[in-house]
Image (cartoon, rainbow over all chains, first blue to last red):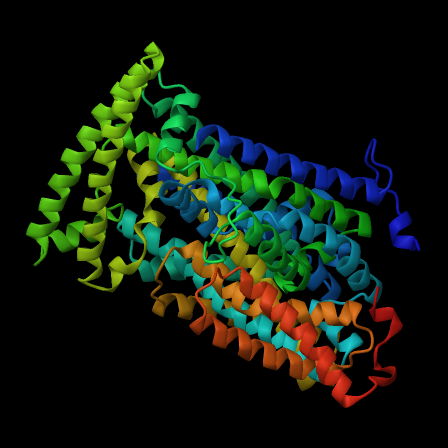
Amino acid sequence: MKSGDEEEATGLPGLRTWRGVYIAVLAAFATWVALLAALTGAFS
Amino acid sequence: MSGLDYTILVVTMLGIAGYGVWRTKAGGDLNAYIKGAGETRWLTIGLSVMATQASAITFLSTPGQGYESGLGFVQNYFGAPLALIVVATVFLPIYRRLRVYTAYEYLGHRFDPKTRLLGAGLFLLQRGLGAGITIYAPAIVLSTVMGWRLDATIVCSGLIVIAYTVWGGCEAVNVTQKYQIGVIFAGMVAAFVVLLHRLPAGLSMTDALTIAGGFHKMKAVDFSLDVDRRYTIWSGVLGGMFLALSYFGTDQSQVQRYLSGTSLRESRLGLMFNAVFKIPMQFFILLLGVLIFVFYQFERPPVYFNRAEWTLQARGGPGGRLRALDAQFASAHADERRGLEAWVGARRSGDHSGEEAARAAAAAAQERAEAARSETKAVLRSTGAHASANDADYVFITFILDQLPHGLIGLLVAAFFAAALSSKSGELNALGSTTTVDIYRHVVRREASDAHYVAASKWFTAMWGLVAIGFALFANLAENLIQAVNILGSVFYGVVLGLFLVAFFLKRVGGTAAFWAALASQALVFALYFTLPISYLWYNVIGCAACMALSLAIQAVLGSAGPGAAQAATP
């Protein structure tokens, strides 16, 4: 089911759907955690 | 502080507050006063959400957390991106569809008036107490260090924020927060750049991080399953997600920020801005504290960072003991510095055995220095109330006053006040709105003009501001200040979140079941808080889960919820 809210354009280049925006945000989150884990491994 | 610093501080603070008043002097109806007429763009919303959450405590106290405990506190924010996505997909569309002024108004739509009042009441209680902390925390640190009067600092900063929040409402808050966060970022980046220049010549960033790692400050991610540990990736993702979901989804101080968006898109993008930048921002502030720790391994720090308190007590009875501990600390610190210099030298020349020996010597000296510091704290704690505040809160301001050039000191102090005012204004705006919409208009006076409710909202905003000032004048806080705020939130937030999740997802549960389940769950959380030694983040999970489970159980006893669960009020 897709509501009218979901169909509203994101207006972001390369990220046309909100699902795409959320996946990009999750990817950024995963990247931050991976970088912090790597930092922990390198200096602890 | 010099005349230049005071000029920068006063011009920045009054300039931003004055601009907020000037931009919003036209006034308007209740919609404009509470939701800024729904004309706010995504970047302003994003910065406003960030500014409301990041109070002066964040910028004063978090570097101290980094100094004392390293990077581990960043895990507290791991749940935020996940929570913000849930808020953007579930909470926000419903709030906008129902055109509510406050989050608790939604509980009235979905359940009944008493559950709405309970949600609003829990918010007012929790945020009302928190509002005192956000004004007291920076005031106690800044007044102690600067030698200002504590009461004058609290009253002056409190009155400024009351003035422009009462005058301009939501729009004034959003407009001023955008510039206040600009001042904050400028100040923090300036402090970081100066810190990098103040590290010993030849000490690379890798050397600095290696030294920090040698003293266990670089453990940003902890995979331990021990529930007693305050910060692990699991408590951060799960407990942190519940805390963030509750805060961003149900706390009116945040809901009000993103409901002011021109459209659903603007509000969503404002939230996603925070989902992306919250973790790196907190990491940056903690790293600042870790690097200050490294800096003070080469530059002798005070044995106790709240120097005003140490000096006061050193003149009295425990003076002899304090001076002896100070001498022990100085000797241990000098040994540590020699050990670290030998260690860096051996590391550069590839002398592995020399590196290990020097590192061990530095670590042993650091233990002696820490022992002297711990005993100093114990002596001070035994003398009076003022020493009970953790001296970690004084680390960053001590660095600023001792190491930054004049002008930048004024900018940093302005940044702390900007942070205090920005979060305070968001809170007061929300407290005033909730009292007006959920209590006054809902219970006391149902039929009145918009102008009447705007006037009432202004009076309630001012009243909450004065309550916060009063609370701050009589407050006396223990433990690290930023933790105190998070602990207070965690005790209440789980249950409030549970109420909203029941409303969204358990359609068969009616108002009466949800109401009693919330009361019972809050009592359970209070009981556990005083008896169970677990990380406070878990109270968010427990409160929420208990509220949802008890709602189902009570509803099963009561029978069908009937037609109360409106379709429009669920996803």
